[in-house]
Image 1 (cartoon, chains in turn cyan, blue):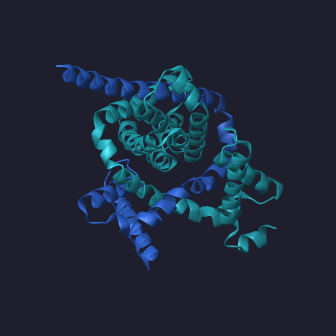
Image 2 (cartoon, chains in turn green, blue):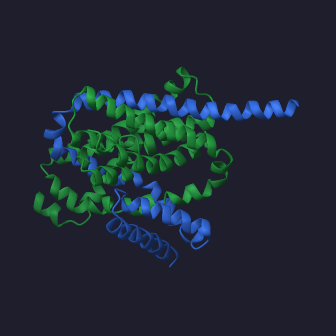
Image 3 (cartoon, one colour):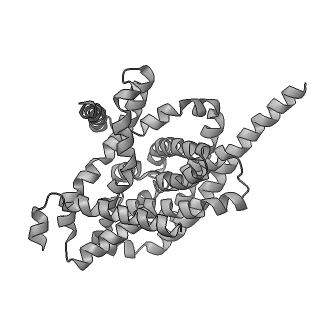
Length: 230
Length: 124
């Protein structure tokens, strides 16, 4: 099994895309936020590898082109940012204040709770980029010397969690303004949360997209300042 | 030719980002340098929106799939994660709610501040 699949240049990417398609289908079919396409596709791929006795390096050899595309894809986040420039300009003070406060909150939360749980330096820097988009988070974790795969897991869990609780949190905490909702969701739970923001409305969605980028950049700077606190 | 050229432009910007990441001694990933460069180039008109738009949105659309291989890599590091899963889950849950609350309310507060000011000025 391994040798045949190892020879296939398309196995890894095909499996990833099919799993993502299946995740999207389940999401549409059942309309529950627990059926998160990304969560399902990761779980399905894991089960397939386990069930088919295919080892991770075999899968990774083919799928590595997907990881390779992350840098160019992140570069392209500049395009919606450029297109939404007017909305950003009109409300820039509120956006910068909100996103900045959110990023600082995230870093303080991680630092405080790292102290409470007696985490070591590597575990601490692994968690620092937890609220930002995976592409940037991987870069931050790598540069600071964290466990990159755990950072990815925590970022994805944060995103799925944000996606699931965003509506309830905004309602209970009385965050009503569409721009405020967008900032809250994008700053706390990056791209996966932004899917929910897009469902809430166009303003929420576009502001959430902007927040991904700005929060990512602010966290790159912020995390490098606080990296040696533990 | 259109898509080939768009992809080439995106890769050139990514490559410059990668070079900056290697020569600048800051913990900033290549993708972020590239993002800033792309934004600056679009603003300055060096790169026209139409020269990157379709391929750019294609890459953004399939971005979730790009995270799958790294996440599936957890199979390999489960031993590491098993020791820390409880504090990591608590930290993730609490900080996500805290960030949402603070980011949302600060934004709303600043927006309302402007609103009140404008209303007051309108009344004068």
